[in-house]
Length: 256
Length: 254
Image (cartoon, rainbow over all chains, first blue to last red):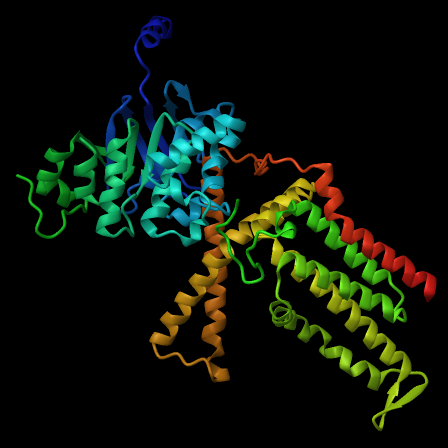
């Protein structure tokens, strides 16, 4: 009965971009990485996922597009549950930008790499070309379209990796440590690109100032559970909370 | 297209040979090599004909002879063994400059040397006028097995990444006083290679994950929808036809 009553209500309002319910997972070796994670991200939100190494951040990310299957709990993206049948559509909706662009960019040229995702999702011909052009223009890499990813700088590679995911027109953008190995200028340029996007975003990071700059809301994950969820500035101003979860602002930073 | 990926065997240009679609060039080169291999080894004039044919293509493709020659030294390790054949061969012997050489051995050596060299020169001509990227496209259009094209595509992308990684590891070893000149220090190098293998393997897994995340289903999407015309095929196969003519001549005169 309750599901019948809830269904029309859910249909009238916009489904959240990401809804994770009671997600638990343990690796085959027995290590319990997630112990009941619940997280809801509304359309258009930008959320930082913070937490120490080994907190389960990467494990959570791999659940979002069905690379790992949950031991318990559910994940849904834009109202569509992550199941084996929906896998292809889920992977279109969840755009993951991985930490090392060399893992993500594998085609011989930038434009081909950007075309890889949408082509897999059935986009062809003129529309495919338009998607590639638009994604490269968004990240400011249009003039490098025919180069090999190998010959690009770290910052350029990162932006191309972002474009490869944008070209799939995802419901939610998931960034895994987007600021690692970037020099300050590349870091700022990437932030400008990200702030200019009109997208729902989940950013996994250790870089707390970057989280503050880009994400109004933050979630701290520690030992497989969400321990705090709130405005980024408030979270980062709470020195005691940060200390408890092995998080730390860089030297010289204060938020009061 | 595909200007980005340079490799040492490629010489960029805009000659009629460069502009031919890659699959046409691959087929022409393959036919050419088959003809060379099928030619009787005593048809000396025909081999000269093949060389003249290749030289004609080099002129057309604006590949300098010296450039081709320098790259053809790649063949040397393979023909080193050939030098032994005339000395070790059986059968009737002939005297050349005071050395007693086996006649079948000499013929065998000539056979390997001539055909090998022509094969290398043909491959160099193909590689010199076709970027690696386009070679893959050509293989894909010729319906080479998907897996082969995928592996070659990934290799083209990652061979430099892995080489750079190996270089960084080597520098890190040397910086800690490793001096790989001595045999007993080869162990560290060997372990480095092992570590590199594991790293590459792990990278392979990460790349696969990233590909899955973008909807990889096991086949590479068609990389270009440019069509090859019958006219391009006809033009491109002219040298192949000439090679076929030479091979037939070889059989007739031999």
